[in-house]
Length: 286
Image (cartoon, rainbow, N blue to C red):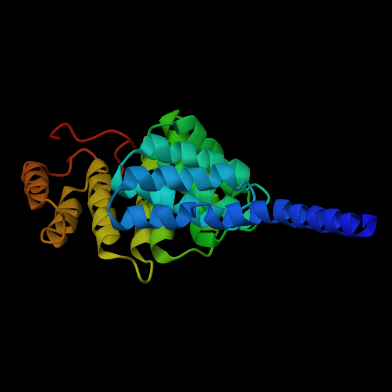
């Protein structure tokens, strides 16, 4: 009889232990899937609930294998649907810390965050990110050219023209595509104009316009700026020819008409040969 009772107690104990072990699994099976709920909310265009479920997934799953995808969706909601750059910036800052051990993802996050900070006029933060990106040996030539260009803009905002020119020279040593290279030539020409070196500015623009595969919008912008540079060197006839050549390509033809009207009132000074006017000064007829 005692053996029977002992066996019964033992069987009951085993049953209870198995039941206790099964409870978490059963609860997990019954627990709602936050990502599934979020995706269902997205289908219903209920972005508020979707964000709540996605954020709850991140909170409950610190090592979840879907975290990167969830963050990307939250970014898309913030930027594309809500158009809330402040929230997107916060998300990216958190992501930058979370994925710091992943060089590729850190690079992608930094590029997106740097652009966003620039748009939001958080220039110090943007400049720090661009500087870090420019020093990244794993960054591709296209993205590195972008980083150098943005660094140059940072120097120009602080009126530091020579450092801007030096950074852009680094950009031009890269094997980037035509458009990225053209952007660096264009900003370099702007910088050299500010340094009152119109000859160097003209050379940069001429090099820009020689690039194979240059997009039409960049070519038009380069010719427009070149016309301004040669005009400042007292060569109105050449400036006129350049502007007439982009009359139909320039986004606002009225601007070209006004510039041509201004040039029609000018002629090279009889006291000096064209191209010898002091850099940075315009003809008094301007």
